[in-house]
Length: 618
Image (cartoon, rainbow, N blue to C red):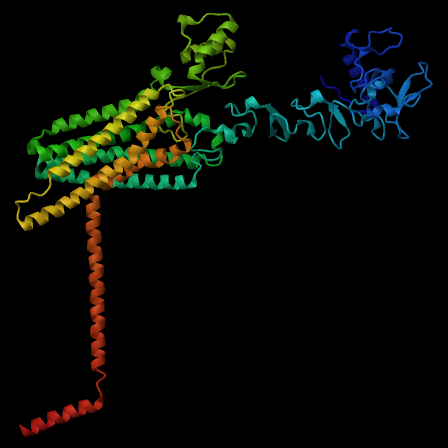
C-alpha cells in the first residue's frame, strides 16, 4: 500500500494514518501504550528507534533504552494540556507547524522532512536513506521491492533483481525471469545476458562468437561447395563418355562412386554455407532468437542434412575400399553388375536418411527430446526429461487429479498436467539431438545424465569409428598387395615403383585425413560416455571444422581433379622456366654481339690490309 506524502499539506494526515495503522496491529501484551490514560487501543514497540506514539514518543524511545537515538536530544517539555515532552526542531521554521511549534512522535523518522533542517530525519535506525532528495529516507521493507520509492531510484540499485528500461520508464524483474525464454523487457535485455546462451559456439550477439572460427567455416564452406560441384560436373561428363565408349565396368563403377561421394559431401557444404548465412542474418541480436532458432524445423533440417551427407560419405568410402580390395585380390570384379551397384547406393542413401531423420520424428520425441520450454509459465519455463515424473506427480497432487494410464514420464503427460493449471500453457519448444548447439550439430559428445538419446549418439560414433578402422586396414592390405615383384625387369620395376609411390601417397592422404577427422571425435565421445568431463570449448573446433573438413578434402583425395591440377601446374611452370631460360640465352647472345661490335679500329684496318694484299698477290 502506497501513501503519496510528497504534498506538504497532506504530510500530517499521511503520517498519522500510516503510523496509526502500524500501531493498531500491535497487541497490548506486545507493546507500549501510547495513551497515558489508555482510553484507546493504541500501542507501540519500545526502544526500536521508530517513534510511533503521538505524545509519548519520548517515553517510548528515549526513556530507559540501552541505545540512545540522535533524535532524543531534540525532545523538550511543552505546555500543552498533556504537559508532554515533544520533539522541537532546531530550525526557526517548520514545514508543518502545530500550536506549540512541536512535532508529534510518529512524525520523527517517517521519511518526511518536517523540520526545515531535517533534524527529524537524521540518523534514524532501520531506515534507508535516499540521498539528496526531498524524501530523505524510506522504511527498510521498501528497499529492493521493485518499486522506486526514492525520487532518484537509489532504493532499487544493487538489489537482487534485474533492471531494464522500457520506453523511458524503469522496470524491475525477479532474477528467475532472466533467461527464462520470455522477453519481459521490451528490448529483450533480460534474455540477452551472457548466462542466457548455453552453447559454447555462441554469445549473446553472435551465433558463432569466434571470428577465427567464422572465417575458417566460411572458407571450408566455399571449398566444399566449389570442390564438390567441380567433381560432380567432371565425373558426370566422364560417366557419359564412358557410357558412350562402352568402357570396362571397373572404370564406370569407380566414376559412379566418386560422383556419389561428391554429392554426399556437397550436402555437408550446403549445411556449412547455410549456417554461415544464418550467422550473418542474426549478427548483433542472436540472443533474441536463440531458443526459437534451436527448436525450429529449419535447424533440425540442417542438422539432418549434415548427418545424411556425412554418413553417406562414410558408407561410400567403405564401398570404394571394398571395390579396390576386390580389384586387387579378385580381378574378376570387372564383370560386376552395375544394377547391383545402383541398388547398393540406394540402400546406403536410405540408411543415411533414416539415421538423420529418426531424431525429428514426433512419435519418438520422448527419447530424443531431453528439454522443453514452456512460454509464459510463472512457475517453471525450462524442464528436463529427467524431471518430468516428479513435476507431473507434484501437479497431480496439487490439482488433486489422477494421471491417465499412470503415465508420469512422457512429454504428453506434462503438457496435460500444466494445462490443468492454465489452459493457455503448452510445450512451446522442444530441444533434442539437433538443438544442443546453436549451429544445429548433432550431439556427438552425449552426457548420459542429461541427454536421453545418448545411446543413439554413441551408435553413430561407433559406426564411424569402425568405418575408419575398416578403411585404414583395407588400404593397408592394398598397399601390401601391390608391392613390386623382384623378378621384374629393371625398367618395369622403376615404372611400377613410380606408380606405387603415387598410389601410396594418395592412400596415406586418405587414411590420414580420416584419422584426423574422426579419431578426435571418437576418442572424446568415448571419454564423455565413460564419465570423464570433456571441456566444452573443445567442441567448437571439432564440431565446426574437423567434422566438415573431411567433406572439403574428399574431392581432392578421391577424384582425378588434383592430378589434373598438378599436371597443368607442372606444365605451366615448365613453360615459365623455358621462357626464362630462352630470355636468359637471348640476353647472353646480345651481350656477345655487343662485345664483337666493340673490336678496336686498328685491328679491323689491319685485317683489311691483310685481305687487300692477298687479293693483289692473287
